[in-house]
Image (tube, rainbow, N blue to C red; front, side):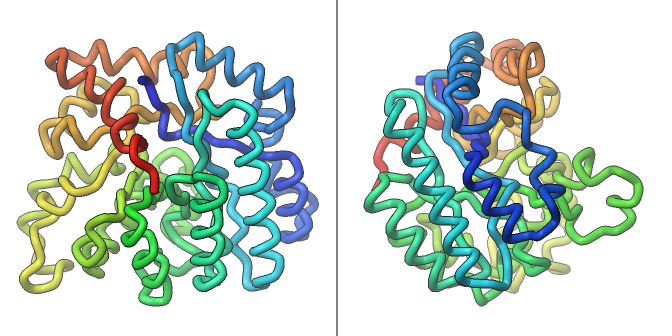
Length: 317
């Protein structure tokens, strides 16, 4: 079964709530309106047709990077619940084509734990999607550890997606590079922060998935190991070892990058990801077909494109 783990859903009622929450007149949600990522009947028909055209059987939906992160706990919970109710409705209407990850009302960790538990138990969601940072705080902050404890107990999926702040770099943002290279910096930074905090070791049953093949980390795996004393605690496994314990999506359609990542972390750690609806048409097709044309052994290409993600989602709890 061909499962795309990196697909976005932007329910209309959820975006309206975010506009109210942010008070910016819709500026923050304007980048995703009109892309075809909504929950209306026409947009869903377009989505299903696009999936059929490239042979994708199931999309794993998330609302990232449109996240309800705010200091107001009531507003955050209301928006997160709206996102999850709307996402669950799409899944219920098309149970053979979609699964969804929960949106959480971070930074309010107890409310997030409650909503995560509700979404997994009542809506059958396999886990949650979160940002690489939360209102400027790293995902690895000790404040968020109760969330990791619950994710670990439930063997849940945790998809970690960029929020668009270039890991706090105003230089990248001022240069217009936030979604060019900034997103990969966010992914790489968040993953190394999780390693440094020891969270992937302490909570090994959280099934962490990061997009874009981990940013640039596979390219730097030897340097990361040589410099381990600068950022990893004493006694920690090396970055290379830690990287082989999380999952990566393939939304970076460069055959050489795919071959390198397979060599660095193993084909069993890679999952098909397309970044729909940001990628559509020929680009969407390329995000799928390049895996089969990258020169990998057939069994590795087959595992990445058709088997790994289905196996990961096969036993939701």
